[in-house]
View 1 (tube, helix red, strand yellow):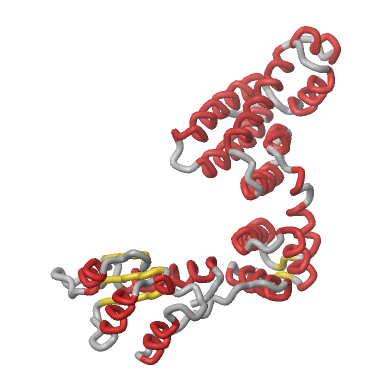
View 2: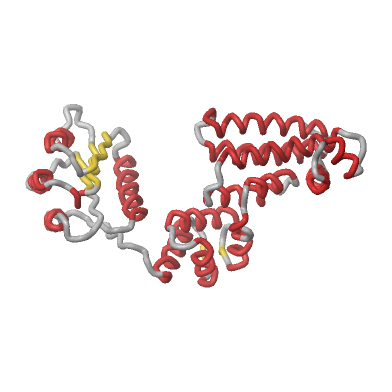
Length: 314
């Protein structure tokens, strides 16, 4: 019960995990209370013909019609021991009597109040870091909240990633390093890190680009453009930027940048990277099950190709 959507979702997930741990074959039902027919609720609450344990989650019960509230309240008189029932209430006075009836019947309550103050968000970050197996200093937690803002999902994601990337104790320097340049991150920022072989840096900016809403296709296009441009510059014998600019019909600044990024690459490696970029292009346009995973996998592969071919392997 409560206004904070992320906390409600976590509470339901925790119950689901606990039920499946004890009953791996449990039947799972999640039903929105608004507009839910009483007959449909009765069907899922009725004893199972196959004797399997059931988890029934009824969401948004603050919006439930009177008949549905009555049906849920009536169920409390004779609950099924082979059924775990979760009701999700968004807070407020509407249908509050239903919650009180469940509490009176012995139901456990998971409070999910809105996390609105800076202090509450700092406490949320510290708890998330602790849950992920790390520790965060007070100044680092405050810096993270200042950098990310009020969105709990982004705060949670950033906290988990900090523990993953830095481990142990997360201090203010780690937060500053993780968030440097976050406002300016783009697909080209990711491509630059990938081309120079900065594995950790490229993954960091990729995650920030995705969190800040940069389109998957734009990131994939930037990586492909960077790899192709490096290959074009490397394939020509001359290293004179002006000559290359005229031959390739590119501005001199872009040629010089491509020359810097092409250092450490072999022609063989760039050819392999072009193949990965082509696969990525298809992946972010629907061929991959997860566009996020396709991008991260491509970044790791291209950086690995550069390292392998640079040293004469691969």
